[in-house]
Image 1: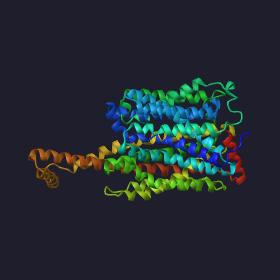
Image 2: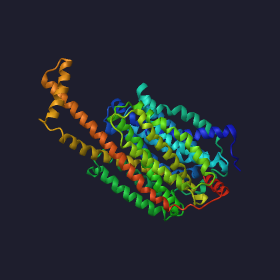
Image 3: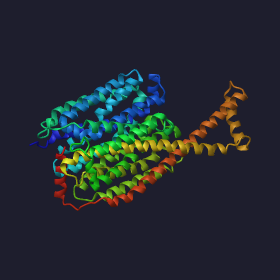
Image 4: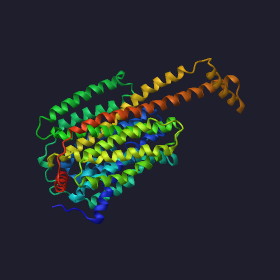
Length: 529
């Protein structure tokens, strides 16, 4: 019988598993601030280098739903350590890459290794705690889910201000080596682990259909906006393959006895509706981390590091909130009030953000981001627990894997939605602003003449050149204002998205349980890994 680690051993496992999960999530956003430098270094366009984001996301979303099956087949500890080694080696190779194809390939491998670190880290962390303390484990893991995507831009911004882009990948190497050693030394194998390999039949067809369906869907979501959606032949083909692959995958997996991904768990009402909420959380978490940095840098003039620090400070509230919520839930408090309050707070954050002016200071963002941190803290942990409420222990791994996949897809959908909406609103706002700059009007003439005169006063140019420069300045200001207004519109759209989903909470069935029943169900769930 596997014993629960105590003292120092437990602390090491907590640090290792949470760090591994955070490291994986950081890599979803850390490269965003380095795309310009990477494109220049490798001699490719921004559109081409953005494949380093797309390839990682596609690999993540393919491997995450398979983690339960792969952990069972290879043994959880073996699979976890192997995935960490793959992630670390791929990180090194990304930093050493000298061509676009090379870095895209290694980013895909990094995503394959990293995808396993989410669900498997969560399972190992649960096993490190007694049943009565497992809500605290959920709180620690939920803290990582929120901090990871937020730390990415901050860390990436610091590296880009003081070093060069390869360090974005190389920084994973010492962490990966230490985490691999600690995992090998302190993480115990589960009873019977690795003894069922010969009994497990590999579902090759299901895995292939999943790769085609989910991979093509992720591609459409990630690349649709940059390739002008269905006007692109590639997007049309991938959309068709995504539909065919996903429909065939669902049909096939429901027909066979031993599927790679057990979709039958979605018959559970709680899990089915929890995936909807998790999808919305993914939309909010990743879209907010995407929209604000672009707003801050493109419209407000922040540096990457300033942007990251503005996000980071209030998000650290999560470190305090998650364990408190975990402790509260361990006493039998219903998760529904947490979910409702969390969604309302996040909606409050997005609505407040949609009202900021262009002369806003960095500290003015603290209160909205504090609302975001508290809201996400109140939503994440209850949803982690609700994903498996009512499931049989044997189905727990499948429930967690599906839930994590849905969160990633929600993030991809949210970013795609935001990109498309920003493009549409930018075009509209620019047209409206330009219509007010009538050539020959007194206001336009005075403004352009004033700017041109400033250029002439600096010396070295004639009136014609100064006027051209003045028109360029005005055009850039119009662009900046149009983007600013489009980002505010996007925050309002996310607000509506969160408000509309709240009534669905009524479909969750929460059976009143005693503290002992809660602990027992969490123990059974953890042992399912």
